[in-house]
Amino acid sequence: MHLLPLRSATFLSIANPMKRRRPISCLSAPKTTPPSTPLTPQTLDNTHLSKNPQTLSLSSKRPKRSLSQTLKVQILSPPRQTEQWVPLNLGKSELSLPLTFPTGQTFRWKKTGPLQYTGVVKSHLVSLKQLENGDVGYCFHDCSNEDVGRLALFDFLNVGICLADMWEGFAASDQRFAELAPHLAGARVLRQDPLECLIQFLCSSNNNIGRITRMVDYISSFGDYLGTVEGFDFHEFPSLDRLAMLSEEELREAGFGYRAKYIVGTVKSLQLKPGGGADWLLSLRELVLEEVIGALCTLPGVGPKVAACIALFSLDQHHAIPVDTHVWQIATRFLLPELAGVRLTSKLCNRVAEAFVARYGKYAGWAQTLLFVAELPSQKALISSQSCTMKKKKIPV
Image (cartoon, rainbow, N blue to C red; front, top):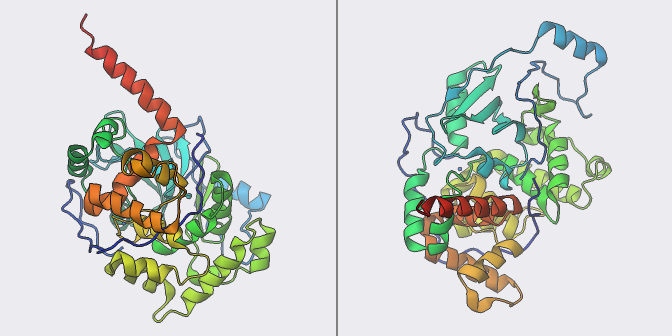
């Protein structure tokens, strides 16, 4: 899947920021605890999931297994023959995995089978699969407490927000959205762990998808090993203390370039926060957007655009608009046509954000995400094909 690269640009906080309220869920699922809301280009043909429950201890080196350890794991832990998919009771209109995971929100989930993605939520290794009836099924790998894991998964998937109601409102106010909604139903914004999201988007600055994914995989490998699924090793994301053990030199040797300085500097800054950096990041969920952007931009390497991504994808700032050149193009085509051909500036970034909020309201970031997904080459081809099919069905015989 060839997707548009992420590029750095500028985002200015919008005027009159709004507090967020998490709406009533359209699901009959346990309510998640409020406070705590890409791309994986690899594709595999196999659908069988194998597991490796061995846990590696933390070290300053990238975790590796010896041949004897590998053989021992294979003997003690034969792969399960069948996977038990537990339905989320979340239809395709509420969650489409291909429209959610490989779209630039997270770089830690891998495609491990047709319509199947695997990743880590907190300390839980889980696979998700779009079932034949359109529902999404989940399967935990060696989860000691599936009730806790399920609640964490619901929180991560933002199930407290009903897409159907949101999409209906967007379509009523915007013709472009009305045209796209039938083809892109289920494109959901995730609610990631703020530290994990922050580090991922520090890697994304002036970078391409493949390299971002390799960087994120490298950093993730310093967390506790959770298992292997379809050849991909999965780890719990490293704690702040564990990240602090990584040196700038080590990251530069791994190919991070100038981003190594920013990652190390941000980790040090977070460690100095009263109460701890992880808690400080979580506390930003209680602030308004302007304050969140300002706080994040005090961290080394975090500019307005990266801050907006973190705010939208992990801090419940549903009206945050990460403005880059691609979003600028969308805005000048559908929201601000009078600015077509004008060079993007910091001041205009603020105007773009305000235009999105004026059109779509307090969930403008979700609308912007769908419009961005619609511009991905793979999705544009799919939309065109689906449109032709729908038109043929309307032709009387």
